[in-house]
Structures are given as C-alpha cells and as structure tokens.
Image (cartoon, rainbow, N blue to C red; front, side, top):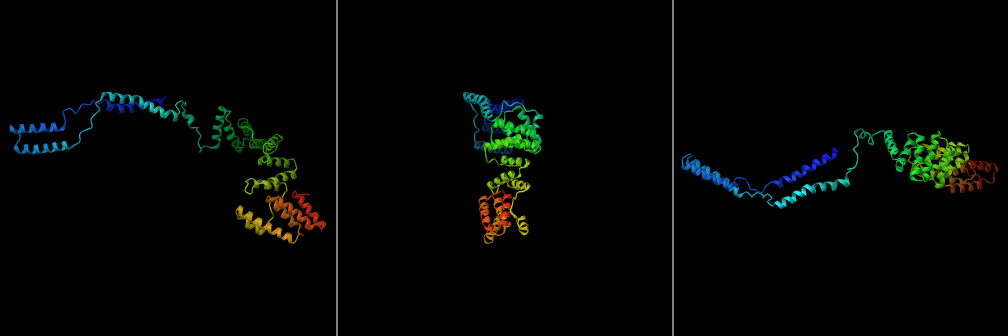
Length: 367
C-alpha cells in the first residue's frame, strides 16, 4: 500500500500545480499600472516645490528621473492577461482533476504490475544474480519447481546442470520430469540414459541401455546414444562390437565434429587404430599446427603412401597403414578399395597374404 500512497501523493501535487494558476482571479494589479503611479509622483513633487519643501533644482532633477522611468514603463510590453472566463477555468480544473489520474492509470496499468504482491526484503536478497554461485541459482530453480512442478522448461534447464554438479539421482528425476512435461525425444532419452549410467558409477546398466535404445528408436543417428551403446558393448567384453560401432560413427562424423576425439580415444582403449601413424619428424611438425593444417599434412602423406604402394605393392605394413588412415579420415570406400588393391598386390605370396588378412581383420575389414 505504500507504493499506492506515493503515487496518490504525486498525482495530488501535479493536480495542485495545475489548479493554482486557474484559481487566481482576473483582477488587474492593485493600485493601477506603473504610469499612473509615476504621474502621481510628479504631481506630489509640484506640490512640495510650491510650498517650498524642496528647492527648484531638486524638484527639476526629480521630475527628470520620474520622466525617465515613465518612458521606460511605456515601452515595456503589457503583461499577459489572466484567465477571466470562469467557464473555461472550470473546464480546465475538471480536466486536471480527472484527466491527469486517468492518463497516469492508462500508462501504468499495461506497463506496471499493480496486482503483484510486495516482495519481502529477505526474499530480494535471494533474487537471481549472475554473480551468485551456481549452487544458489540451482536452489532457486528448485524452489520454483516445488511450487510449479508442471514447468517443463524449468526441468529442461535444471536437469543438465544437476548432472554437471554430480547430483546424478536428482538429475535422473529431473530428466524424467522433462520428458513428462516437454514430450519424448531422442536427445532427452539419451540424456536420461547418461544420468542413469552416471548414477551407477559410469556403468551402462540395463536400465540405461534401455533408454539409449529408445533414443535410437526415435533417431537412429543420435550420437550420445550410439556412443553409450558402444560403451555398453565394451563393458560386456565385446570390444570388437564396440570398435565397430565407434568406427562407424567416425565414418559418418563431420571433420569438425566435437566428439571425434572422444571416439578416437575410445577406439584406442579397445585396441583399435584411430589415426594414421606418422614419422617422428612429421609428429614434431604437426604438434604446432592447427587442426586444418594438420589434416592437410596427413592427407598429403596418405596420398604419397598410396602412390608408392601402386608402384611397389609388396609392403604389407604400408597397405595396412593406408587402410587404417582412410578409416580414420572417415573414407571407408577408399579403405575398401585399398583393401582390394592390397590383396591383388600380395596375392602371389601366401605368407604376405595371410599377414595382410590378419591385419585387415584387426581393422574391422575382414573378408
């Protein structure tokens, strides 16, 4: 109510400022205008001089000064007349009394919040602030969701933050709420599966795997779900299956995909090759390059290796390096073509052919 009192007081002051000049009467200045005053002064000087109260010199000097003031007053523009029309003053007063409050309300109601309850001072200190610790902001969102449990957007925002904070059980609950109130989708199912696996200490449980499979049923290219399905295969001891899943993802991955390094590290973990082998000098030179220059250098080396093997195809290790390089670069068609060329090149030597086939099998290109 204090706010309304301030608004009422401000409105009253504004109305008073408008009504004050309207209440002044239209009477002219008391005592007439300046010219009449100066004429009275001249007559008084003549009377004083006639009875000898002042000398003729002093009287003449006074007449000159008053004459100067009289001329100055005659040259001055007349003052603006005050409102004399009583009817007009009443209309203006009514407009001030009624119009000003109505205009103020017309502006405030669409822009302000007159029905918003007062916000206690203690609550204001807990208002959202980008400078507050993340835990405090999360607590505020949780308080909001306790009062508004159907706020799907709030659950959608809260769930990944809880996962990042390591509150895995809470994150699982938040992701489930997000699916309930925002609808089912492949990314939400994948996020839920990730939270369940995190709550289990990184183990892809049957419950988590079920969520990843549901995500892939909604979108067969859901990256996170595919990766965790491969991780489940690795944890089950099926490293070849895990490598096949991750290698297929690499084959389809754009060159600038942010998750390529994770797949490459995972392939190394299960014993699958992830990058073309480079000579020591090339490795040292590539260390200081950006990603684009490094990829260009690797491609030039792969092309030189392919050219050399076409001229001399007896190098089994060279063929395996070439196939592995094509797989890592996501060019599976070239890898298969190189496999065919390699078998044709060493087909006359049973020992080399056996070595080649074993290497190709380790690369996932058996047969």
